[in-house]
Length: 246
Ligand SMILES: C[S@@+](CC[C@H](N)C(=O)[O-])C[C@H]1O[C@@H](n2cnc3c(N)ncnc32)[C@H](O)[C@@H]1O
Image 1: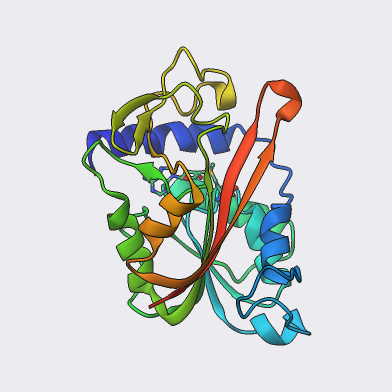
Image 2: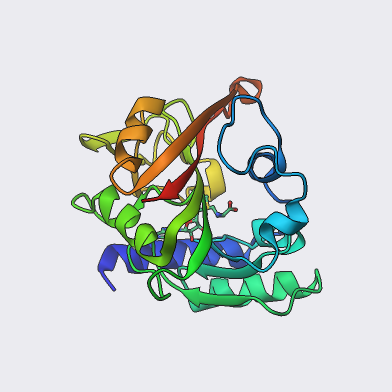
């Protein structure tokens, strides 16, 4: 493990050790999975029964955080698998899920660019606000996307969320590459007690930009954009997508 990865692991492990988890799944992930939108042409839209659609399919929640979205995925009928970046976080997730009577979780320690599962194993992969974590300035987003593609079955569904340039988490970050920002301690010190300070994140500027980086390995890409001004102090700006592995 590199020095940067060790620091990242330490920061996030401390964060989850001290987090009073609410475990509420992300409502937009729920909408993407079972919402029926006219503009959403992919195969998820218009399915009459989500029970039949998701039952017994293998889903990976890549970097699942405290496990909040796993509760939703389990409820939808998936076989749930997960990763997080330290054994301690994985342990916290298991404890959190036990409180929701989920004892079957298979969770392993891994990173965006080293996913500890075999090739072509997953029907679905969810990366909710985690795809854009880079270990260093030369870490390319394609490494993460290639690894995600590796573990998905052909035509497997890749669902994700990634901040846009107006999101509180990247605001004021210092550009350190064409599409990379380093989070600057003085501009973003409040969130998570400075959790992201010095972290390098991949920055997606537009829907078109996201489309381009996904299109090498994925097809039938649909992207939606969300902006909420957060009462003027903590704006949320996300791109959310559904796609299929080529
Ligand atoms: C904003 S949280 C999102 C967690 C979860 N997906 C959710 O929606 O609640 C970002 C997650 O990415 C993980 N992370 C940090 N660096 C990473 C890396 N290099 N590779 C993979 N995951 C990373 C952190 O441990 C953290 O749980």
